Length: 424
Image 1 (spheres, helix red, strand yellow):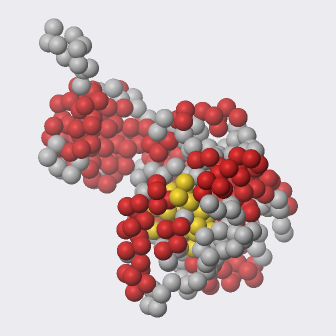
Image 2 (tube, rainbow, N blue to C red; image 1 turned 30 degrees about the vertical axis):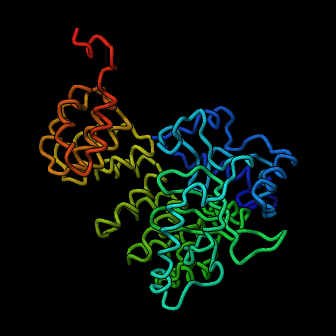
Image 3 (cartoon, rainbow, N blue to C red; image 1 turned 180 degrees about the vertical axis):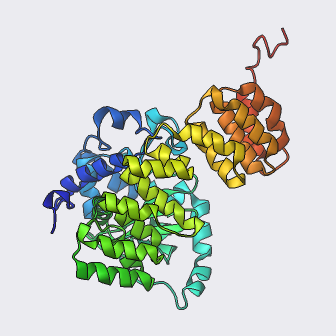
């Protein structure tokens, strides 16, 4: 049975407010929204004026597609974008006082001006993508959130959010849309791009992804069968199921290893004690256990968190706000393998405490790889152990992480002209 209060809104203003709410709700315990969003409790900004939107359209020589134009008139940019809410812990926010997600109308620019190198690379790669597709790209979206297979329209795209590290949100005129017709929204990153048929479709899909969907037993059976056959739309929808009636089917699918990420996501939405017991008892391959741990962290009951603590899943404990996380991370520094130590160091850099310094130093001395050693140095820096960082960072200067080690050393060096720098 459907829950009307838990469905995407019919109007764009309602969708925008829901989008803001679900993005903020998704911010984990390790993160904080940027100050402006935390202060107002919303990712939305004051609306643009009609004249400001019209001026942006004249400057760009285009008419904005309907739902994006309406968005600007409701909120002239936001403190989030297709990658979620901007947070203070995210390096992409830069100066959090100036951080933007979706930019105001006056800052929308052609993507080819923002990052011409990225456009050139992806357009040149298109022949390879077409060859891998055995006949070329499909002409339109198969379903919302599907993968982009033809990147050539990127040449005409507008950058509608500030990019960081090759990640960006784009408004793209796919198929030569006419006046009053919608453009696609793309979430572009280093490995590829996903797309939605319009700005409104992006909002609706994101809201639905967070709220979940109701299905009856017959639809649940079809979704599990489709996911088992590798049908991506079925996998996507299966991950959103929230109906308790589907619980037994989902548990059975999880035990058989069917679309583990999607099935555990759905089980987390149901989240009753029987689900927790079932998740705790799953015997899956090691790489699939992360999906189970993520589901248990999302459920967040004492039983679920106790299982995470017993499994040493410190990262997921931290995301759930469990105070045991840093102590478990420190223990994993002492006894874990390379990947475990890397994860523990990254967590302790976000939960710094001088008490972890001896364990971090000991882990650094026994780790052979520069990536792990750099993560440990970053954690030592966060814990206030500047001298320990200064002693060890030169070890990495000649390797792949030398530029990061150099940046650490430069930041920790005394300012020129200071008493230490002058030798007094």
